[in-house]
Length: 250
Image 1 (cartoon, rainbow, N blue to C red):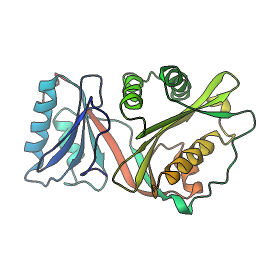
Image 2: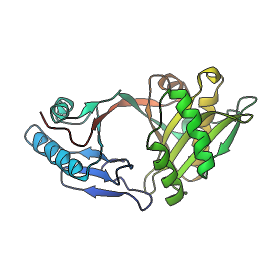
Image 3: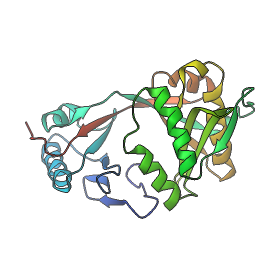
């Protein structure tokens, strides 16, 4: 999923080297180091190389660090190179055939597919209210993915009447057995009613219908217990390390 990742659409590209795989796009795209194969002797030089590369592009970069990545002190080395860690999340995976997908949408809620700019606006109204902060460039990234790769990206918004109360996305990774789930934040006063579970099962059914076998989630502390009850298993943690352009290395 990381080493052999493919990109959907035309506005970004995947670059593969001997030691890293990186996702590269414009300043408003998601720029990231997805995978690395490092040890104590090679890590610092490769980190410095990535900092110079993305710094030269003038973009923010995320180094997506997993708890099983090596060397063991990779996070400390990233910090020394000007990367700042964000909140860790739990890497969770489920086999779709083992999930209970017989779950009805809660009363008063309807799930609406997101296929255009108006739908994206509704979805991000819900998620920004749920998480309490702006989505930044993510809105434009999702809109671009829906335009460029509509078969590989699915999105849905949960509506209570005319009010968006939750939103979620899914990427279908062609050539793999995996679909990945993103978002799912629910507005505070609508939590505890099963909306998040409904969004998970809704996307799981779509993935199964398209022949995918597994779901992967980077789960927050709030969503992890729900996913565990649904049958997801924790494999480790993942932490985004962010580096803004113009940052000097220590």
